[in-house]
Amino acid sequence: MAHTLAQKILQMHTDEEVGDAGQIVRCRTDFVLANDITAPLAIKSFREMGAKDVFDKDKVALVMDHFTPQKDIDSANQVKGTREFARAFNITHYYEGGDAGVEHALLPEQGLVKPGDIVIGADSHTCTYGGLGAFATGMGSTDIAGAMALGETWFKVPPTIRVTFEGVLPEYVGGKDLILRTIGEIGVDGALYKALQFEGSTIDNLSVEGRLSMANMAIEAGAKVGLFASDAKTVEYCKAHKNPNPMLLAADEGATYEREIKFDVSNMEPVVACPHLPENVKPISELEVLPLNQVVIGSCTNGRISDMREAAAILKGRKVAKDVRCIVLPATPTIWKQAMKEGLLEIFMDAGCIVGPATCGPCLGGHMGILGDGERAIATTNRNFRGRMGSLLSEVYLSNPAVAAASAVLGIIGSPKSL
Image 1 (cartoon, helix red, strand yellow):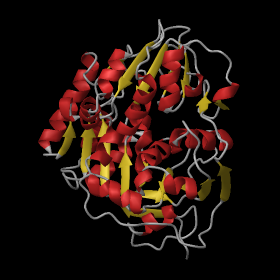
Image 2: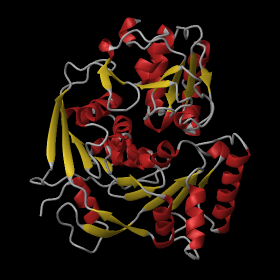
Image 3: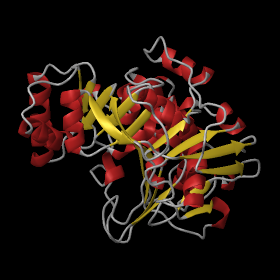
């Protein structure tokens, strides 16, 4: 049987024969993760089920990234309990403080995920690692507890939607625009418990960081996973990030797809997801004049070094508009140091930006950038649900880093070309 990428990776991790969509298969896991919000729930379940040890201390990661530094007593206690668990079971990959970063940027950077892996995490954006050709998905904390103890879990084999992009990306258009365009086409439930498999000449030429951004938001279409083939670019990325022997991996010729969608990007312009759903996507040229209160550049979607460079190129020599808060959060300490080395942080600060630590921060309405009643923000984050970044009466728009940076200067949501 010819396999899609999803079927092929599942087959690599089970002794059963993987067949059609809907089949239940029991699979070995390569990596399990949780963060400072979800780990305490997983730890509670782990203890309640009577587990005596984790399946492999080197294959569990606990990343304290959502409220870091801790913003109040409750968040401090959550981290304290997780830290004690990590010490009790000698977990190798416990990240806190200056070693921590946004988990879905940190793990690929540390070489902890690779093509062909099955990765599960107690965070919906675990699907990010599909950008490296891994079957990666979010699960509830109870499932994560079971996997921490057993090193395995079960899946329903997902049907696959094949999404093909052809053409050369125009200026200021990147992976974020491609995934927003996809979500705008199929809707926030258009890929519910399905795999999105991305391919085509545009994808072949897209950077691995751009692919990670796209895979990150597969969940915003309801997808179980978002998958990219592992090609020469993937291998180069993995080798540069502490992973010396990554595999090449692609779907089989003749694999069966539930649906195929094709895009020509040649005349595409940057797009923006408008409130209050990621599917409410419009080309930048079609937005009315919308004054801003806040801009956020960062997150597990667009907080990598390429995103920092893209934003800095727009902000260099310019000033953030009066009364606009522009918050820049490099996603890991390594990215932070690289941005500092390249002079990007100075560019941000000279422009009037607030440069913060490697944290999820305002993305989930955590801290370091909460919106008040009636305020409007544009962000390089992944969700714009009502109240996502603070007040239920606020608005969040989603864009790529270039549009976010240009909007900070303009004081309204606008295109870099307007500068």
